[in-house]
Length: 353
Image (cartoon, rainbow, N blue to C red; front, side, top):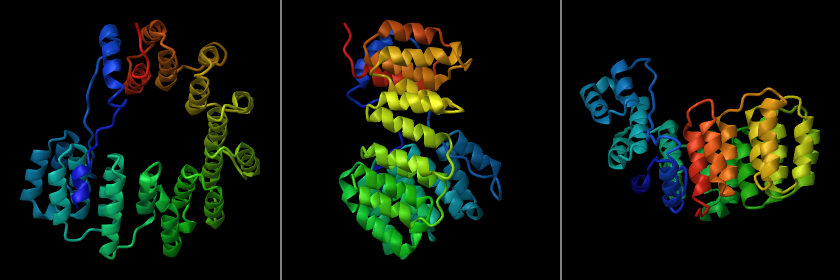
């Protein structure tokens, strides 16, 4: 498992090139404290000691390893999976490599744990090689394995593998899955294959609302706006995601008036719908402000961190640091990771005097 050596689990709020500029602006304003947290995984306490859970919760991996070594009865696959998962997320790739290789019986869950972390580490080559190695063991991939693989190859040089992955899915009988189907449709959309998207949708015998939503989003991504609307109108039932998928698609394709019209027709608007409209009008700063202000003034809705983050990013990309400072200082709560991330994304792309 050489590909495992590349794994790391540190999410970034902005690219490496963006951070220096954003950090300089942050030092000037000191609008919020910077805190770094580590990832953790909690094991079920069923048939396993609370002490191990506490070690993993607190990222005390050395102590967890000692407990693991001292108790042979605790070395079950789900325990090894959790240990491997935590080691990967804490950049202990060599330890994770050894833990995974020591597993005498590697089930689909064990491989999926590894595949998922490699995908989160943005290592598509590692995911692909790991998937091939899994196949060489004779183990049959399940629907979660395929969904991770599809997610990994999207937007990468491996996207040409999508039809081959689709063929594997059909051979395994997973093309009927409501988990694999939406993931494949999204991947076909990334490569601009409209026929592939429709074929995957048609292969799903029982289509839930998530499958319909995936097709709407896929058509929107490839710019087939009228076809997306036809699918939306044919849906036997819709949820909030159906509406926001359509609205977000209109916005991304610069059909702001259509987006506004659909937004006004919504009977219920949750945090996602408002966030889509506010962020969608980032090119029209005044329009974004109007939506943000109307939440409280017109609809008596308390703005959440996601909404403030949208406005921070809109103001930031427009180079309006004064408005960002005023907005953050007026927030009824402390800035969280969502607001901080928006700040760094926005000010990593502008130059201020």
